[in-house]
Every structure is written in C-alpha cells, then in structure tokens.
Length: 215
Picture 1 (cartoon, rainbow, N blue to C red):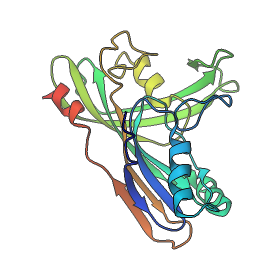
Picture 2 (tube, helix red, strand yellow):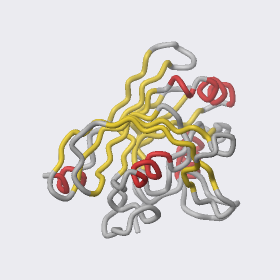
Picture 3 (cartoon, rainbow, N blue to C red):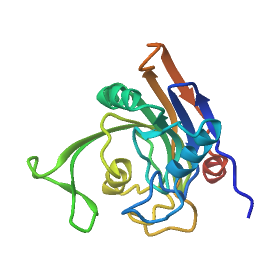
C-alpha cells in the first residue's frame, strides 16, 4: 500500500501544522508500534536534516481529524504550551438528532482507572470543561455544529455532547451508531506565533462527509 503524504497546512522553521486524518493516533500508546502522526512528522523533518527534532504540543483523539501543531524545538513547544489557553480552537461536529438552539456547556470531567471519561458533580474530583456550540444546519436525523472549546480536557466535546443526548455521529465510545467514521474535525486554530508574534489564523474546509450527512 502506497503511503499517503502528510497534509501540511502550515510550516516554517519553528513549527509545523498538519491536517490529521481520522483513524490515526497523535503518538503511540505505551511504547507500542501503532501507526501514529508523530512518527510520520519526525520522518518528514529528518529527511530535511537528520539533526532535526519534533515535539508534540497537543493531541487529538485517534478518530478526530483536523489541525494539530508540532514544534521544531523544545523552546517553541514550551512557549506554545504555556500560552495554550489563549489559543482559539474550533471544531465541526455532526451529532445525532435535531438541535435547533446554540449551547454553552460546563461540566466537571473525571477519568476513571479504565481511562473512561465521565461527568462528575464533585468539583474537587473533576476538571472543569467548557464548550460552546453554534448550530449551523440540521435535518430530521442530524445536526451540524460549530464548536469552540474554552478548555482542553480529554474527550471533552464527545462526553459533553453525549451527556445532552446528542452524541457525535460515529463515536465508537459514546454513541451506539458507529457505521461511519467519527464526525469531529478540528478545522480552525487562531494563536500568536511564539517567535514572530504574528497572529496565525489557520483553517481547513469542512469534511465533505459531514456535508453529505446534513444535506
């Protein structure tokens, strides 16, 4: 099978932004040899110069597609992570059933020993997750949302939408309907470049499968 090329959306000498396909890990789990984006990006930059290094800034779930940032030095990684709460992150999601009103979700999330993320009322036990969403379009079966997350908790969008009975279509963990790939795409990032201080506004087009479901 021919290896697909990396979908590079932005690159300079300090960082690189990739459009990650659904179904691939950001980095391998527990030192396993799972196919992952980190190894592919590392291979790409080492072809330019064997001394090059790559650092993970943040992660996306395996079945979430979209924009993910890697740093080319530890300094840039640290600068980005130190200011990550200032990064504006937007997602498209197709959820089950009809949603007609925009929403603001605030929940405390807790990760169990089996790595399941659940909502808890215990504020000391959980971590606050804040998600805003706008309804773009809907039909009798699905709704297309534009989502802006204010926090970056594990499985945040998936858990919170499932909690209001509108799980993401294709979510194998939080939805019973899994006939399609998960319909969650990180489509837009806005942040200040850690070195040049210019405002970066990186955006990709909506996944055509999402539009097919909602039309």
